[in-house]
Image 1: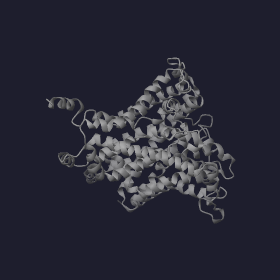
Image 2: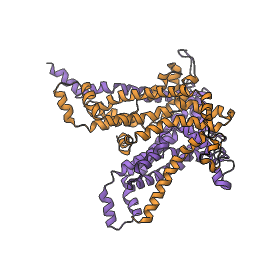
Image 3: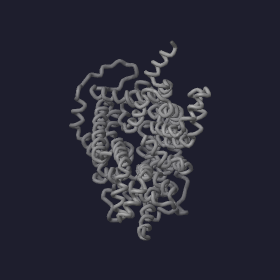
Image 4: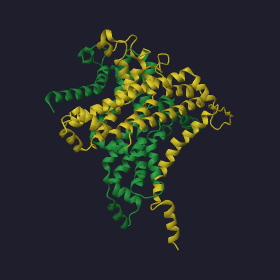
Length: 277
Length: 300
């Protein structure tokens, strides 16, 4: 490869990175500005125009702590269900031989391409109206309870465990549940991290579903309360953009930090196994 | 004697009937959350369905195709389907071209590889609601983008301009989802045999030629997947028109079918009508996916 080509490649890659990251940098800068400064110089931190007031402002309109707790319960519930039931079905799909296995596998693939939002109206009628689970954590968690991509990732990892290991343990009289927890699980610990990361972003970032079924502000996850703030109350605030961006930082920071710290568990190979099946 | 029932059980249930037990929670989940609501949506779409107190016995008359007839003659619904088409025409090609380009280049470098990869997927892992806030700031009338563009800025500004509202949303979603498609292409690139590049090089093919003749066909399964997933994301569009353009504005120029479903089904209390829109959208999405598979999938 010639030198100009190599430089061009570097420029394209770097420009791409800036395009993806700049809005996040700008989010932080904007959240710290006392008065919104949309000029080009405003994109750089200005000591005279820095303040934490926007964070106090958003916290007065949206109880940030309460909203974060709700987001945490919603996300935690989904992760717990996905890990427990996803491991079980992933194990059944890879290690056990039973009729219906290939049909169940096909189902897990199919579910990934169903446009989920389209199910929201019937799900809303069922969960909120018929079962009375509006403003309820269970109602929030149910539609997301088992992440199908996670099921496929577990299956893929279990497939890589040598079959002889299971046969040997079975001869020693171990039960299947014992095999699963004592042989298989310890070997696929990295898959557990990948699955938790991947599952985390679903409920934490979800807007439409919790928005539909929570009317009580004390039950709303942060994505919903921030969206309500953006669409309704922002206009009446002293520095609406500042407060909005402060809320956005609080919502985005946990996920971004998590994915930077654990980036090595979120690579193309982990994901590839999930979608290729 | 005791062997016979056991072998019969194996014949019916397989060698490890426990597989059924282990899969039961997931199967129940899929039935309750995907299969049943899908059937229920079909049922609602043929009825004048309305909300009632839990347990109350109310009559919800069968109306045949009335909901479907109504939606095809409703200009707001038709507009929302046109908007999805505009969205897909902008979003899908941009997604495929840019993510394949960035993945191919990223695959060639070793320095800064991790940092670049992380930078690319940060928008994907962040909440739409959070990122929408900063885009509203960037693309407002007096925002940074217009300050940089100066006289080139559209009037009225992006998100309240009837011609630019939908393309702006399409660009936003393209940008936000790109990271995961780059990862998919990176995975696919690992499966393209190195020898193919080497033999292309010995045949004197330029880098651009070998990209067209080796890389593009080599990652075709990933391309089919990227087409499918980006189409599904497009038909699911809700948060962006709801927040970026204040509910599909200006004047419905950026509304989406899911947004109309929310307005009609839940705000206006006509879930049967909303369900019919949903069914038409599912069928439309499946048709597009089948066409993509036909034309991009190839024979392999």
